Image (cartoon, rainbow, N blue to C red):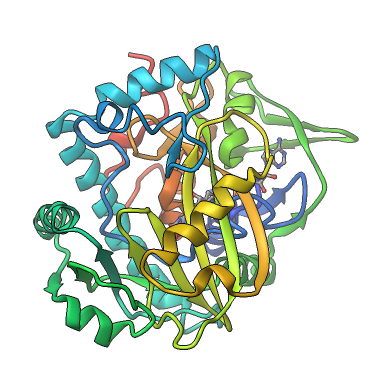
Length: 413
Ligand SMILES: Cc1cc2nc3c(=O)[nH]c(=O)nc-3n(C[C@H](O)[C@H](O)[C@H](O)COP(=O)(O)OP(=O)(O)OC[C@H]3O[C@@H](n4cnc5c(N)ncnc54)[C@H](O)[C@@H]3O)c2cc1C
């Protein structure tokens, strides 16, 4: 199998990580990207590496937020419309909000998170991508939110993550940029951050050095795999025949998966960033402003405010109210931030699985084609381990972690 020819579709963090590990394991790899490498959701995300993270699914999350869902400025926004795919997705999401399923999802995310974190520690010695391991601070304005975060922290502790509660005074010591009265916070130790675009671009260079052919502006139109024959990949002006293929197309993955008789319930979950000139004092370490669900990350010489989840279908329209929610939300914790000079405004689509767990594994009718998608809010964190697992599975038939529960066809039974 060492001379296996593999095509990877998608040049985001998942596709690039997969191409890198396939090449490391001796495969001949071509990566096809319809735009430029790292032009999807991997480009402008919050840059936080959070191995210990709960899924979005939580008992009662939809009912608790029902009145806010249709408000343009709320952290979770679902504009009302008739969309059968979204209805089915919301039903599956709701079913995955029971305490046992949330616990199982957290366990699976922790398994991937721990393993990926170790791989980031290896990459930091190979190339520079603005990686800093400073933990993560979650800051709460109210006692109620603080007790919810403490409850989550206790749950995450059961999966090997360490944390400590910090008082309001300690919050200000750790982050002097937090100037408004807060109830306190929680510091999670196993967390880091980086410049996400630098990471993916540098990793693609490392992959190219290992022999990966990177082809940009090549859109894959069709993937066909029948029985024992080769996998046929059709692009606008070419046709390739290879031994194996990986579809890592982010939110677009279901379109190609359908050609392989696999319906993937992935919804595009739009998120935004607002990059601002670093205020003085600036944010020192990755921070989450809990009530507003706004992430603040000190990337290079600016601060990235990122977050919000908008289930409005397949579009890249930037809604001003949602961008504003980032600075207004952060402004409840950091005075003056709303007037900071803006570097960039951006939005993109996360590939959201309804149960909060990625889809990694072969397609049932065409096992030569693997799916690697559905990473939702944690694709950067889980990119390296996903790539490694896919490469192992495709080239050796075995994976270093048990990924049976991540199989992409788990929604069809
Ligand atoms: C605002 C925001 C903040 C976030 N913060 C974090 C964070 O702090 N930490 C974290 O871990 N994660 C975070 N995420 C989530 C993370 O960004 C995603 O989970 C991750 O980028 C998904 O990577 P991907 O490679 O699957 O998708 P993408 O990066 O979207 O890449 C998919 C690529 O496939 C290409 N493609 C699709 N179809 C085809 C085709 N037919 N032919 C050729 N190419 C194709 C697309 O052009 C695209 O480049 C955040 C996301 C957002 C939006």
